[in-house]
Length: 382
Image 1 (cartoon, rainbow, N blue to C red):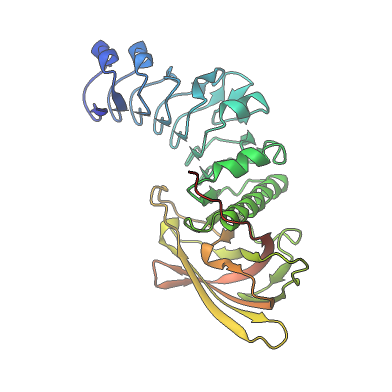
Image 2 (tube, rainbow, N blue to C red; image 1 turned 30 degrees about the vertical axis):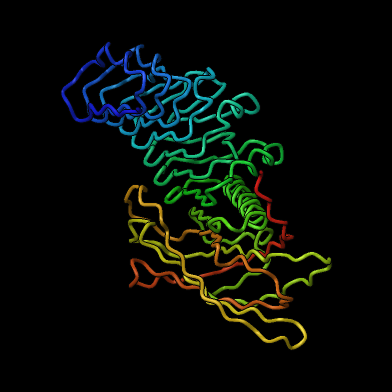
């Protein structure tokens, strides 16, 4: 029988030595406690999957069990962090939001408010299971280097000093990226209010977004009985990349031609969207509704079909903030992945609503069409 141990918001200053005998302990909650050091007895907890040290008095990065999957260090006073061993190989979620990280301690796999490095190839292998990385409100963070390209949820909102972002060799990690999207096909990459990002970094973020969208669509095509994919990325700017979104408009609507299907196989059309909108005054992404009314017209007088896609930002754990100025939004909704019925033209009209009422003006829009061959459904194993 597995168990949780909750010592959160207590006056406790030390982790009891007896905790090492709790063989079946899965979750240990020390959030808001006065604990300054984590007992080495925690390393004996082979079943421990989650450790919450948020807003505790801890000042040094703790040793953790090899099997740990979730680590919360948000709001701590840790100033130096060294990730130089393999004990993080199973880590699935790392939260360092609102922390006081100031500088790295080594140059192999580092996290710090001045510099975060995950230099390929060795650290990529160490972090192969990392899917969620939260760095919200790390005000002094300037560099995010060699991030794993297969992160499913990354949040650097309000990292106002962030200048540079890069990902490890995205072609090198295609297999790893494709294999990680097994059940959950949702993905987000958030850089709201990161106004110091240089153009190379924005290009890197866009390239990683399009890579994820292609693989999400491909995964959906091969296993479309699962929940449809959703992707959302946000970063400051007012320019839509012409190389990534070949169809563009200076307003909220556009019409495009669909390339004919030149092979005998059925295919899907995945419409990824790029919008430019002024988000000033908005305080939470979870309040946004993105609406697209679109029409697909078939070739040779085959008529047309009208669709309405409306999707809501479902993530509720993003920290509240006030967005400032124009932002670029890149989106993919499962409702906009369609089986191609010989369509030759598509027309789109986009809307953004905030908490279902206030309209957010779409200043520009762009669409990229991914043509994905339909894959046969995998047969259940005997």
